[in-house]
Length: 243
Image (cartoon, rainbow, N blue to C red; front, side):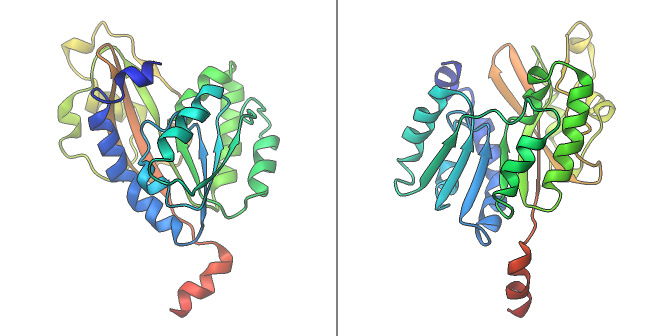
């Protein structure tokens, strides 16, 4: 219900930024796959549904029963013919990663979009050792496929410094220490409790990233990191090379 209250006004700037960043990836991977896997779609509030709906089939992983009918209702306005397979099974509490790997093996060439999901894993997995094991499994499972993710790095009750976004663009992803220096330096942050969403080590530092401010409410501000990778499926390589 929080999403419904804040969707139209408070989240508009963030939605536009995510759309501008994510659309080129969606267009690119659609050349090689007519199916997209979305993890954590929720009601699709922050997704560019016009572009998402251009895939013939969506496989959506989200255990929230109310999210499905909201997502379907919003998508149908843009893409009434797109087939949606909604999966409520939670693959991510299995710290061995076996269930997640088995699922991906059924869709070996399908691109995956993690929709503000990875930054919530520390809430699902109580032990830090479980999180680190899941991260190792995660990196291995997505290394050879196309994927995109926007996820929390930090959150608190105060907005990050706007100056941190002045030269925002694709660059090497920043460490926690670099993010703190860039976005959270100054007197207004001295008494603020900053939540680390434990996503620093999900990906190698040499991958490119972009950063966004998401004001969920006037008292809840998240620093979001966006990253993606494009891999051409092996059975399409010779087609690309012959053109």
